[in-house]
Image 1 (tube, rainbow, N blue to C red):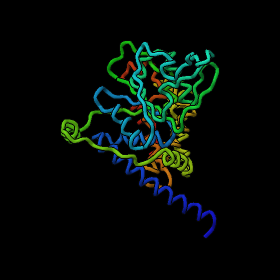
Image 2 (image 1 turned 135 degrees about the horizontal axis):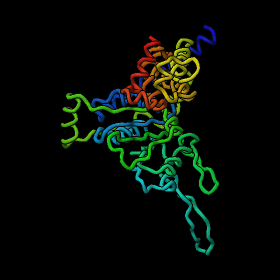
Image 3 (image 1 turned 30 degrees about the vertical axis):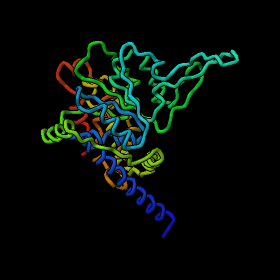
Image 4 (image 1 turned 90 degrees about the horizontal axis):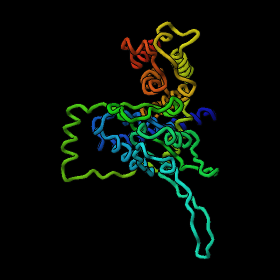
Length: 332
C-alpha cells in the first residue's frame, strides 16, 4: 500500500471516529433541546468550523439552554452576558484595578471579564451600544482583547453564540455589517412541532432532571476542529461555492435581478465560511468529502446576514431568502 493510500485510510478512520463522537454530542443535546435538530446541527457546524453564530428567534425557544447544554456536552467552559444599553466594554473584556500591597506599594491588576471563556453567549447582542459591540468584535476576530495597551489572549477554543429577538426592535442598535460578517452562520430558530412541544411539556415540568455528561473535552474539540480543515474538498464543490458567492454580488457580470434587488453582497469571508462549513457537515454526516448538496443546504445560513436588499426590492416584497433560493437553484 502506498504512503498516499495509508494517509487516506488513516484520515478516513479518524473521520469515522470523530463523526461518531459528534453524533453522540448531537444526541445528548437533542435530549434536552426538543424539536430543533437543524439548529443543533448548525450550532455544531459553527463550533467545528471554529466560528461564531448569530441565533435569531423569539423568546422561549431555548436559546440560552442550547448554549449551556453545548458547553456541558462539549466539555467547554461557558458564560453568558445579558446585553443591555448601559453595558460598558469593561463589563465584557475586564478592567484594571488599583491594588495596594501590605508594604504600601500600589500596582494595577487586570481582572478578566466574562469574555475569557470558551463558549460565550451574548444574549440580545443588539441591545448594547455600538461601543460595547465593538469591544466584542476584536475578541471574535483576533481572539485577543486589549486593555490599557496590553494584549490578553483568550482561551482556545473560543466561540461566541449571540442571540437576537426579531420582534422587539425599539431601543436596539443594529449590528454593523463588519460585525455581522464575523458570524460564520445565522441560525434562525422556529417554533417546535406539536410532538416536540408535547415532549417538552413533560420533560420540563416533572420532577426528573436530565443529567448531562461531557461527550468531548477541550482536547477532543480541538482535534475535531483540526480534522475538519484536513477534509479534502473536490473541484466541483469549490466551483459551486465560488459560483454561488460571486453570483450574489451586484455589479459587472451580475444578473439583472441581482443588480436590481441586492444593495451589497457577500465578500470573500463568505466563501471561506462555506468551505469550512461544508467540511464540518461532511464530518457530522460521516462522509469523507463535502458535496454540492452541502453547499446548497448551507447557503442560506451563511449568506443571509452578508447581503442587503435595495429599497425597491423591499418595497416589492422581495426577501433575502427568495434571492438565495434562486441562486442555489442554478447549482442543482
